Image 1 (cartoon, rainbow, N blue to C red):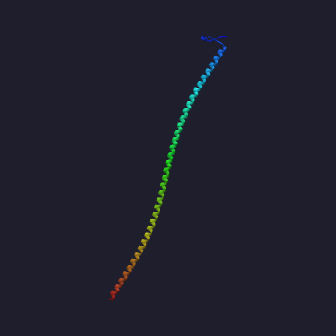
Image 2: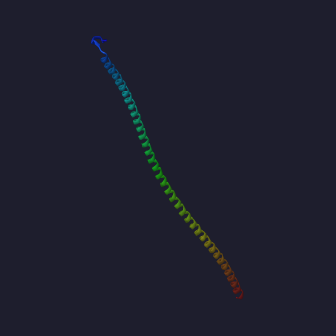
Image 3: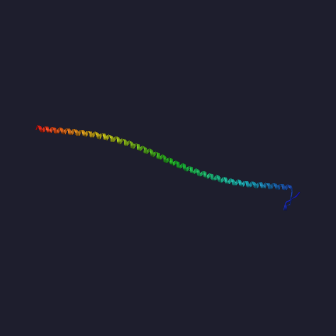
Length: 145
Protein backbone atom coordinates (compact mmCIF):
# COMPACT_ATOMS: atom_id res chain seq x y z
CA UNK A 1 0.00 0.00 0.00
CA UNK A 2 1.29 3.36 -0.90
CA UNK A 3 1.66 6.20 1.63
CA UNK A 4 1.11 9.68 0.36
CA UNK A 5 4.06 12.00 1.18
CA UNK A 6 2.86 15.19 -0.19
CA UNK A 7 4.70 16.62 -3.18
CA UNK A 8 7.37 13.88 -2.86
CA UNK A 9 4.94 11.22 -3.78
CA UNK A 10 4.19 7.91 -2.29
CA UNK A 11 6.71 5.67 -0.62
CA UNK A 12 6.94 2.18 0.70
CA UNK A 13 7.36 0.66 4.18
CA UNK A 14 11.15 0.19 3.78
CA UNK A 15 11.72 3.83 3.02
CA UNK A 16 9.37 4.84 5.82
CA UNK A 17 11.36 2.69 8.30
CA UNK A 18 14.67 4.21 7.15
CA UNK A 19 13.32 7.73 7.53
CA UNK A 20 12.07 6.89 11.04
CA UNK A 21 15.51 5.48 11.94
CA UNK A 22 17.26 8.57 10.58
CA UNK A 23 14.84 10.81 12.47
CA UNK A 24 15.45 8.85 15.69
CA UNK A 25 19.23 9.05 15.17
CA UNK A 26 18.96 12.78 14.50
CA UNK A 27 16.98 13.30 17.72
CA UNK A 28 19.58 11.25 19.66
CA UNK A 29 22.40 13.22 18.06
CA UNK A 30 20.72 16.49 19.04
CA UNK A 31 20.18 15.19 22.59
CA UNK A 32 23.86 14.15 22.75
CA UNK A 33 24.91 17.57 21.46
CA UNK A 34 22.75 19.24 24.15
CA UNK A 35 24.27 16.98 26.81
CA UNK A 36 27.79 17.75 25.53
CA UNK A 37 27.05 21.48 25.63
CA UNK A 38 25.75 21.18 29.20
CA UNK A 39 28.83 19.15 30.14
CA UNK A 40 31.13 21.76 28.57
CA UNK A 41 29.37 24.53 30.50
CA UNK A 42 29.68 22.53 33.73
CA UNK A 43 33.35 21.88 32.98
CA UNK A 44 33.97 25.59 32.39
CA UNK A 45 32.26 26.41 35.69
CA UNK A 46 34.39 23.84 37.49
CA UNK A 47 37.51 25.21 35.83
CA UNK A 48 36.64 28.73 36.99
CA UNK A 49 36.05 27.46 40.54
CA UNK A 50 39.38 25.61 40.47
CA UNK A 51 41.15 28.73 39.24
CA UNK A 52 39.56 30.78 42.04
CA UNK A 53 40.65 28.16 44.60
CA UNK A 54 44.18 28.15 43.21
CA UNK A 55 44.33 31.95 43.46
CA UNK A 56 43.10 31.81 47.06
CA UNK A 57 45.69 29.13 47.87
CA UNK A 58 48.46 31.24 46.35
CA UNK A 59 47.30 34.25 48.39
CA UNK A 60 47.30 32.14 51.56
CA UNK A 61 50.77 30.82 50.78
CA UNK A 62 52.03 34.37 50.29
CA UNK A 63 50.51 35.45 53.60
CA UNK A 64 52.10 32.45 55.32
CA UNK A 65 55.50 33.34 53.88
CA UNK A 66 55.10 36.93 55.10
CA UNK A 67 54.15 35.67 58.57
CA UNK A 68 57.18 33.39 58.61
CA UNK A 69 59.44 36.30 57.65
CA UNK A 70 57.92 38.49 60.37
CA UNK A 71 58.29 35.69 62.91
CA UNK A 72 61.95 35.26 61.99
CA UNK A 73 62.54 39.01 62.40
CA UNK A 74 60.87 38.91 65.82
CA UNK A 75 63.02 35.97 66.88
CA UNK A 76 66.16 37.83 65.79
CA UNK A 77 65.08 40.94 67.72
CA UNK A 78 64.33 38.80 70.77
CA UNK A 79 67.77 37.19 70.60
CA UNK A 80 69.38 40.63 70.36
CA UNK A 81 67.41 41.79 73.40
CA UNK A 82 68.48 38.69 75.33
CA UNK A 83 72.13 39.39 74.48
CA UNK A 84 71.80 43.02 75.60
CA UNK A 85 70.11 41.89 78.81
CA UNK A 86 72.94 39.44 79.54
CA UNK A 87 75.51 42.20 78.92
CA UNK A 88 73.63 44.51 81.31
CA UNK A 89 73.54 41.77 83.94
CA UNK A 90 77.30 41.26 83.61
CA UNK A 91 77.92 45.01 83.87
CA UNK A 92 75.68 45.18 86.94
CA UNK A 93 77.59 42.31 88.61
CA UNK A 94 80.89 44.05 87.86
CA UNK A 95 79.55 47.28 89.39
CA UNK A 96 78.42 45.41 92.50
CA UNK A 97 81.90 43.89 92.87
CA UNK A 98 83.54 47.31 92.49
CA UNK A 99 81.12 48.76 95.06
CA UNK A 100 81.96 45.98 97.54
CA UNK A 101 85.67 46.63 97.00
CA UNK A 102 85.11 50.37 97.62
CA UNK A 103 83.19 49.58 100.81
CA UNK A 104 86.03 47.36 102.05
CA UNK A 105 88.57 50.08 101.23
CA UNK A 106 86.43 52.66 103.03
CA UNK A 107 86.18 50.43 106.13
CA UNK A 108 89.97 49.95 106.07
CA UNK A 109 90.44 53.74 105.83
CA UNK A 110 88.05 54.26 108.76
CA UNK A 111 90.02 51.73 110.84
CA UNK A 112 93.30 53.47 109.94
CA UNK A 113 91.76 56.85 110.78
CA UNK A 114 90.58 55.57 114.18
CA UNK A 115 94.07 54.17 114.85
CA UNK A 116 95.58 57.54 113.92
CA UNK A 117 93.12 59.35 116.22
CA UNK A 118 94.03 57.01 119.07
CA UNK A 119 97.75 57.53 118.45
CA UNK A 120 97.17 61.30 118.33
CA UNK A 121 95.30 61.19 121.65
CA UNK A 122 98.14 59.15 123.19
CA UNK A 123 100.67 61.69 121.87
CA UNK A 124 98.59 64.56 123.29
CA UNK A 125 98.49 62.86 126.70
CA UNK A 126 102.27 62.28 126.60
CA UNK A 127 102.83 65.91 125.60
CA UNK A 128 100.67 67.14 128.45
CA UNK A 129 102.50 64.83 130.87
CA UNK A 130 105.83 66.14 129.57
CA UNK A 131 104.63 69.75 129.97
CA UNK A 132 103.53 69.06 133.53
CA UNK A 133 106.94 67.50 134.28
CA UNK A 134 108.73 70.44 132.66
CA UNK A 135 106.73 72.93 134.72
CA UNK A 136 107.46 70.95 137.88
CA UNK A 137 111.15 70.88 137.02
CA UNK A 138 111.12 74.62 136.38
CA UNK A 139 109.38 75.24 139.69
CA UNK A 140 111.90 73.02 141.46
CA UNK A 141 114.77 74.83 139.77
CA UNK A 142 113.31 78.21 140.74
CA UNK A 143 112.91 77.06 144.34
CA UNK A 144 116.46 75.78 144.54
CA UNK A 145 117.87 78.93 143.05
